[in-house]
Amino acid sequence: MRKHFLLLIALYTLSVSAVERVSLEQLQADWAKYQNQMVQLTTPLVVCGSFYDSLILAPERLYGPDERAVGLADGDSTDYWRIVEYNRAQSICVHCRNNYYVVRTGDRVRGFQARVTSERHFVTGQGVKCSHAPQDRLAKPKKGEVRVVGANVENYFADLGGYATKRTTPEQQALKTEKVVQALRAMNADIFALCEMQVGNKAPEMLLEALNKSGKKYGYVSMPIANQDRIGGCFLYRIDRVRPYNTPLSAYADTASHYHARMFAQGFETLDKKGEPTGERFVISLNHFKSKRPGRGNYDTNLKRMTNADSLLAMLPAAIEMYGDSDILLLGDYNCYTQEQPIQAIVRAGYPDQLMRFCPDDYSYVFKGEMGYLDRCFASPSMAKQVVRVRPWHVNADWYYQHGAYKLKDKTLHRYADHEPIIVDLNLQSSISNLK
Image (tube, rainbow, N blue to C red; front, side, top):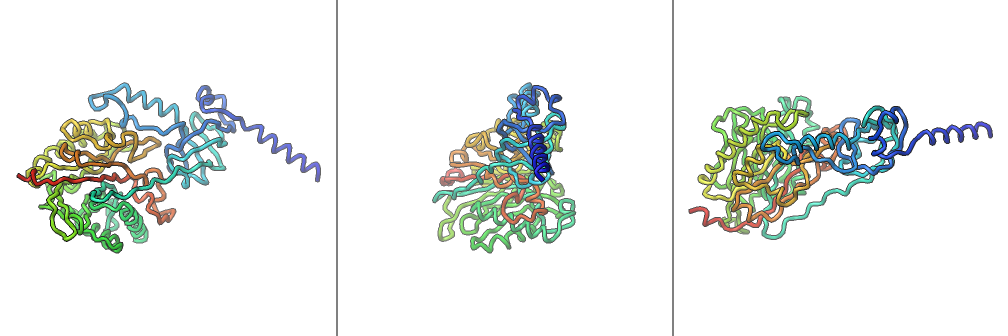
């Protein structure tokens, strides 16, 4: 028995000594030296992304090159390739089959053990121990402020079986509704500008039926279109706080196009406690630009997104005339990072980026370990003077995607969609002068 015990101790000691303590800098200097070896990383790392059974780790959070590259909107940029190479050199991919779904982006990692399988790739059967990043808390708007939220709700459909919901079951649909409603209640907005809603009335009505059980009553404005099996958008608004003014205005004349419902504007006016108009009026433009194809970089479908931007900019003067007000807020999912051409075209047209004004180092989306803003908030000059606070609320992008894919049956509001909502607080001024 004693011999067996000593043998076990010897084997354990040998296995521990086989694990070499190294820094990320040492590994980067000579990956081949550590090929197929067990190592313990001594460099403190942060989780930059998670997908399937893998985590992307780096010494610091990584920005996408399209988010930060100087000069990108004016043509090719050497800064773009510098960031690409930096992100590639700094990041490592760890395959861990037992706890990847409980790790969040932003979590801190220290001293994990894994086998080096190839350059920047590791395998560990014991998972990665993390200290969780604190959850993002959202303060209520101050008294007298109007809160507007731009949010992508990731294929919220009432009808199942279409191109966006082929594999969705009624149970999954109910869970999706529960998660979205929790998030909307927590944001406590007067107006929600929602992308990726099914076109027409069915989806808003299904969502409102659940949302209005909270006591606060909401109405909706949706863009009508013949093809119901399409992704569109809608506005939800608190009927005791605001009401629509005039009818929706689309950026597209072709009502058969699904882009007709993905870019439109609506005027709103605020109400006093008696339900009477206060004289404060403004316009919200909800926009959902053409998506990228994953992994193709800045210039894939860029021409289509530039066409979206041109159509939007052409619509805005018509909106000012139609609603009689120059206070315009532009929200939505633009599928463009900050330095890309469509975003800079909007800024140069006179609609400053409010996220760059209030929180330029934050993000609303994470893809393959790189973060940036795909969701935007622009404002006309007169509207910008009334914007007091803009920020993303981190309840989605940091969570593992399975939290929203129903396999984990997670009933919290986290990962109700893949994009972060953008919270905008306004201190409105009377727009009577703008109506002349």
